[in-house]
Image (tube, rainbow, N blue to C red; front, side):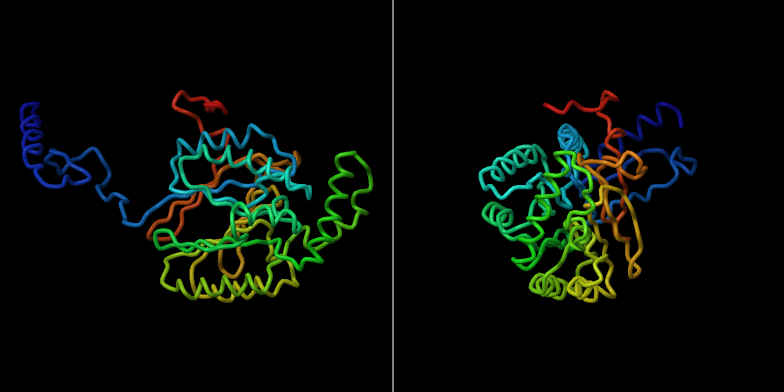
Amino acid sequence: MTLRRFAAGMLALTACASGPRPAFEHALPGPALPWTHATFDTTGGRFTFAIVSDLNGGERRDVFALAVRQLASLRPELVMSVGDLIDGPTANADSLTREWDDFDARARAMPAPFFRVGGNHDLTGDELKDVWRSRYGPTYYAFVYKQALFLVLDTEDLAPERAREIFVARTKAVQAAAENQGGQDTLSYYRMQERATGDIGAEQAAYMQRAIAEQAGVRWTFLFLHKPVWGNPADDDFKAIERALAGRPYTVFSGHLHSLALRERLGREYYTLGTTGGSQNPRDPMAFDHLTLVTMTQDGPAITHLRLEGILGRDGKLPPVTP
């Protein structure tokens, strides 16, 4: 095609554009074309959301601030979490309020809606749960977005007496760690099953089963929880939720262990995420700061993990942690 013919083709293409413009336009005659094909992935209902992982258990504060700046560039439609948003090893309501005020101020810098998930740092004990409920309402909930069901679970769903016992034991363990005391493995907290896997109560399990039954027509279900509760052999309530999900596609995201891992369970993908500012084991190659990006397509979710040090700004550098 001569330059004149190409220019004439472009003029004709522009003149025909009186109605809605197609997504892709060109005036090249073919059949030889400089692209592979013109089947673009523009499926209706496609959307992308991000997940941040543990901030606490020894937060490195600038890390979450960096992630917030990077999320502003990535532009997900919503941002999920998997708990441990504050440090919270206290029963003092004023201290908890200050911690939540500080976190909320940082989270509000995200352009997308941020959905809280409670972890053991956020919800262990009645005092922490009372502050959560007064500020944010229920500790577990469900919602639907673009034909996908999102289930947010509370893995600190314990009987009040047991929750208090765990809170007291955990407080002693945290104090011992702060004072660099030896023999921490002899403290009762480190022998408690709930420390590793958490628990789901019967009322919560019934709520989730109802949500699953009422939303039978969704195209996918996502579960967000802090502790990998499927590792608790005594937790029949979470197993009841899994049975309710049998036969439908779903994906599970958890945190707590500060190490990225993917395992298959019941033919489905169960993720344990790393950190977005929480403490790390320097000997663990899967302990690193990252964001998880999930793009929902007609074929299911496309999931990738982005290490924070690789999400650069337009100048090729990490964005500053302050505007």
